[in-house]
Image (cartoon, helix red, strand yellow):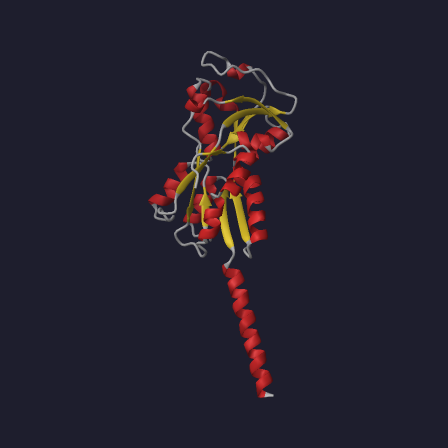
Length: 255
């Protein structure tokens, strides 16, 4: 009888340890909204290969950085610009030794499918008269896509003529959705966002010199519960980078 009880207790202990180990294997990723499709594919493959659960939170980099600052439980942060990674680094909220800039992107002008218009990427071109309606992008003060958009519009001397028509979405996917539904006649998003939608057309690609380089840094969060180096390295492996390239990202740093 006592032997059976001891065996039962040992079984419960082993099961408990197993559940704890599995819980510890969960990795929480806070990533820019533009990474949604690529990262979902990459992580699905990783979960098949490893006994690891990956949880995502996709949103504007600004929103995610503020959440991390307020104590949100994230293990890894991937930003769509260096500004918000620097913001957390200045507050000692990321592991600076792990930080790496590894992806790039392009900024594009889009329109609802079949409703494209002619644009000349020239400072003498009157962009405001090329389309009727509103122009959607990310919030121009905080969302990386919106910040890049304002830089490009300013560079081309188009800002003053269209600034009152701009709708700033909470993240770049929100801006894409507005254009897909025809609520905005034009939008400024990343090339990778435009490519995953069959409801928009790319009207033009903004010159690289018109905005600061679009760079995606990745790093462990300082108080991460799971600093899984295997997954962190996998994100930058040839297998994962091939998926990012498939979705249109530029690889700016290889392992």
